[in-house]
Amino acid sequence: MKLLALARDTHGTVVANCVYYGTIGQSMPLHVYVMEKLPGVPYIQVQPSPGPGRPMSPAAASRVINTVTDFARFFASSWMNLQVMETSAIGTLLTEYQQRLSLLAEALPSRFAEKLSLVGAELPLLFSSPYPLVLSHGDLCEMNILVDHLTGHITGVVDWEDARILPFGISLWGFENVLGHMDSEGWHYYDNRDSLVSLFWQAFDREVGSVSDRRAIAVASPAQFEADIVPFRRRRIGA
Image 1 (tube, rainbow, N blue to C red):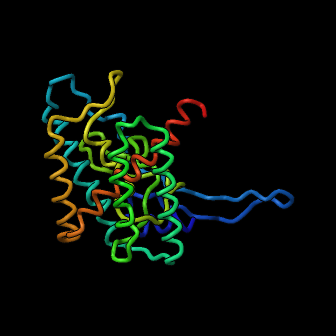
Image 2: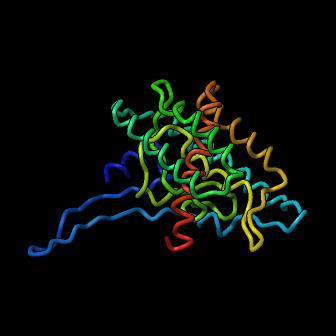
Image 3: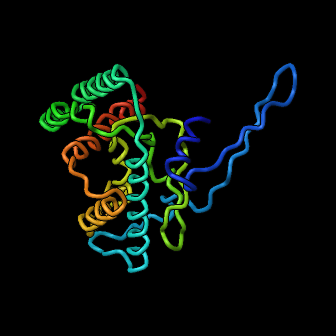
């Protein structure tokens, strides 16, 4: 409840309100919660999937632009609601992510070694005292983002179970989900991916002002995205 309340304080009405009403019953009491039903549909249901070499329709392109802009505001909200953590806890987090990257280096083919080495070398940037700590959603996938199916505006963000206080940008990998689509042949970025990324940062800067430490932000997203490959891969192969 405290974590969900923090999420709502940070992000406003895109996070469902939840109220605890106590318990019913005596010998085996049942805890009663009532949670708001957010409007919208999961983004994956309306995610544009143009054919190979084909641009999105104007209507679809407009919806994606609205989703990207709202995503920027979502991340800006976390940037403007900074959290605090004991120095020892920050050190523990750094160790955790270093260990996860080490596991990844063991699991992936050698061609990924150079990239992992670069991320590992710069990882301490995220855990230095000037860099902001924020509430980070643990699974910003296409199923956990709700949008208006007509406009593409984000109406809700659900499934906060794995949210944690982490360096800003750790959950930025979720933004990649609105820059393309998946089909039976794999992942495909939209033709206008680069312009959508530029739009995201323009909208982000409008909300928070100019951000100088883009280097650390650039490290944050691949650090989480790549570290998450290990547990995902193990689930896929049944390890």
